[in-house]
Length: 274
Image (cartoon, rainbow, N blue to C red):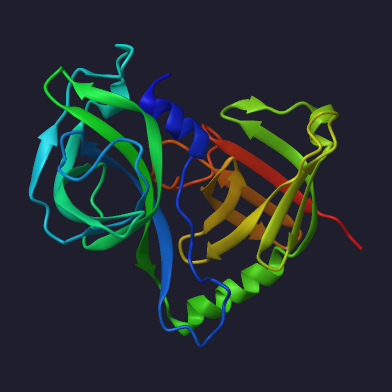
């Protein structure tokens, strides 16, 4: 199984909008984004599979490094890793609170930040046999509009998504879900919790998680736990009793910009009347 490809499939498009409950007392609001971190296996004080509590990253990018011919332990090429990575000097706090300093590769620019919720990627990859890397994915905070207007609109939109919703259309990529399948799906939003239930035999376990949204960017994120905790990163469109939620995956770890239904998962919902 390909390292990044399998991970991209699991998380589908990650990162979560932070506070977004619409309380006007908030002074700063953030959105969670996601990235991939590669750590060289020879890093002093570090070993594969170890738990990392957090990674502190300074603002400056040390350099850039292009990886090519990346393969997993079985010799299968990982095409998604054949790209330019950012080299950053970091401090890693491990599970025992010890601190390891060194350089890592970062998938995309994060600026000065702290990475949290780090998840180890099981496979190890090599760069044309030159270096060997452990992979992790992680979340970090990015500031978003904290104006009173946006906070008020966030509260209004959060109020607007409350209730029970019927799934009237759903598609994965360009593949439309069959009508008999759609009738078995239901979404309930109560407070900041969204639950997707499926009455299909063998699929009865509900999927539940917290949601947060940002009206300015239309970000709609659903933090769920399916074996691991991760965030379905998407966008939304709310018009009265009609709601669309689109968890796109057009770019690894980048939020989709428009609801085009070309990739990812699209839900078209209609509010049930009391």
